[in-house]
Each structure stands twice: as C-alpha cells, then as structure tokens.
Image 1 (cartoon, helix red, strand yellow):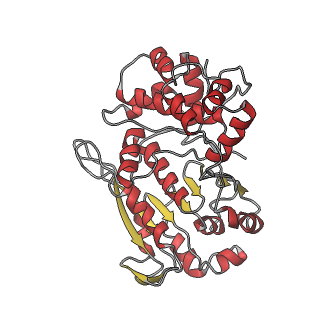
Image 2: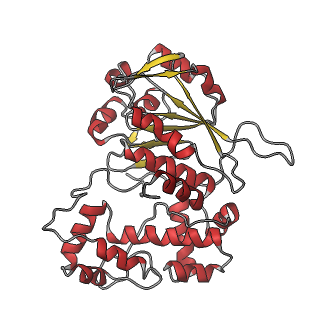
Image 3: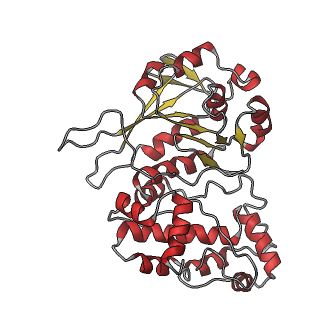
Length: 369
C-alpha cells in the first residue's frame, strides 16, 4: 500500500496569524506532546531537526515547544524524568503537533481508546493543525480518530497490533514514513528523523532540509517508501557490497544507466546485484536512481534558472516531459511550481519519493527518457 506522494501540493509552512505587509512571517509553531513512558531520543528529534532551521537572514523558521498532560515531571523509559513547563493548553497554539513514542500508553495501546486526559488534551488542537507521530505515537493519533481511512505506519514490531486495534487505518508496516498532507506518521527511532527532514523539505525546500541534516550529521534523505527492515544493513565481509556501483552512478546520473552496467561494477550477475542492492538499501536500483535524479533536479530547480529541457538532461531524465512526470509523482507539483516556491541560493538539496519503471537488464533504469 502506498502513501500519497511526498507532499501533495508543496507549499511553505504557514501559521495561524498572518503578518502585516512588511512584517516578517512568524515562525511555524511546533508543539511536542510528552507522554509518560516516553523515549527521550524520540522526544528530542523535533527539537534537533526543526530547532535550528533558519532563513537566509538567520531568522528561525520554526518555534519548538514541549507540553505534557499537565505541567511537571514526566517519566521516561530511562532512569530519569524530565520536567515539562507547559500543560495541554499549549496545543491550542500549535501549527504542527508531534506525538513521539511512549511505552506507557495504557488503554491507547491495549484497547485503542484515549484516556480522558488525552481526549481533553486533543480537544485543544485547532482544526487544520498538522499532526505528526513518531513510532508508537501513531497509536495516539489513531485512537483520536485522525487516521481513519488514511495511510499510516508505526514500528514494524507493533504493526500487527496497530492494525488489529484500528481496522479503519490503512496500515503499511513496510515503509519509513507516510505523508497524507496534514497527517504524517513514521516508523521507529531514526525514521522520525527522516520524517522531520521530509517536513522541512516540503515546507522550505531541499536546500534548507539538507542544511538541517548536515548540522545533525545524518543523511539528508531516505525515501518514505524505503523498507523499515533491510536484510543486511551492515554487509558481511564476505559479501561484495553495492557501494562502488552507487558511487559510479552518481557521477553519471545524466547518462543512461543499465542494470548490466551496475552489475559490472560489482563483478556479479544482474540477478545477484539486484538482490544485494535491495538487501542493502531497501529499494530497487531503479527506485534509488530515480530518487537521486529527483534530488539533482530539485537542486537545479532551486539554485539555477536553467530551462526545463536542460534541467531534465542534467538530472538524467532526458526530456522535459520525463522530468515533469517524475517530479510530479515525487512532489505532487510540476517542476515549474516547485521552482516558483523554492527558488533559493544555497547548498545542494534532497529528493522525494518517486516511482520507477524499466528494470530489464538492457533497458535504462531510473526514469530515463
């Protein structure tokens, strides 16, 4: 089951109060809901990713706050508690609410229903507020009814229970994150980083997201449709990896690339290479190449005024028609609309999810032509 493309109708983040002419746009307010039994690492992900994002003048683009079901100490799964200054009324000020994982969800996890305290807290959230969950935080959004009829994910170890408790949710246990516009969910731990970077990318463009990723020392992009569980994330020494082939491709994205070319880099058969590539990356070679080509196209659209035909050639899509097809599939908007929204100067950018075709050995892979 597939979630919507990486942010249908890409547009910058907005806030409740609009600035008057000549006034700077106020930061987008992200409120993180800290629940008892929380995982400290996941609680801090929104602060780490959103907290340092700034415009070219150095003005923060997000304001991050934390609240609990009541002010005071909140237990964690570790051997310490954290003190939260704000109660649930802070949720009424949020443009985005993030619900990280907790291991003490009680009736939410066991019966699929909110506690009275959680229900009262969610009543503060304004209509139209963007909702985000990390790992088992999806149980909370589902119990509140926000995920009915929508694609969603959670940590693979809890996916079966999640689907059983919430049959109206379109659960996809195989992806890192889902984006259904105003409701987004992620799998466990590091997938929360991927989702927050995806949100920054959708709000402010790939260059800004990549700067946040560099600051956090994490990869700038992992496709939301990538598998949660990769067979061999750290290849055993006796197995040749596909790293050299990927490096080879990145120097030749503007050229047609065939599976036979890739397999030759690893001195293995096409069948062996394809299997190892998926085991190591969680996606097929064609999907990975499309993602890299979309990344290059985004960079060119954000940082240059090159005509679309030239962007298509340099990104490896061959024609403007192919460029439009893959950018629209990945981002939900045309290349022209993306450029109009995110034309900036700055560092390189990152891609979004895209479909691919053409996996026969002698046919170009990665959306060429």
